[in-house]
Amino acid sequence: MTQIVVSEPTVTVAAELPERCDRCGAAGKVRAFLPGGGDLTFCGHHANRYAETIRTCADRVVVESGFGWRAP
Ligand SMILES: [Zn+2]
Image 1 (cartoon, helix red, strand yellow):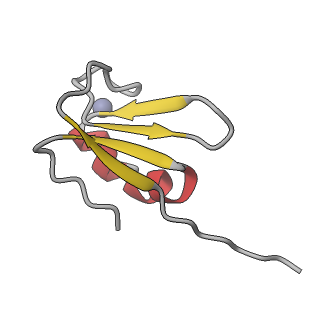
Image 2: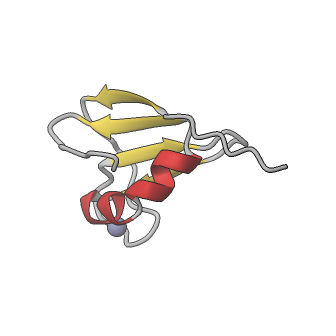
């Protein structure tokens, strides 16, 4: 029996994110903290591209103030 648990990450807003996108090196807009430890930072482009993955994998997400990221 497979049980699928989808838990929404806690989203907080930060004044700025000093980190850079792990994918392309652009300024980070969204930082996702994973339940197992570690974190990934995404620029605006990649945050939207991986929005579904971030929403389902991350347990906490920090979004830069002014960046209108919406998880699907
Ligand atoms: Zn990027």
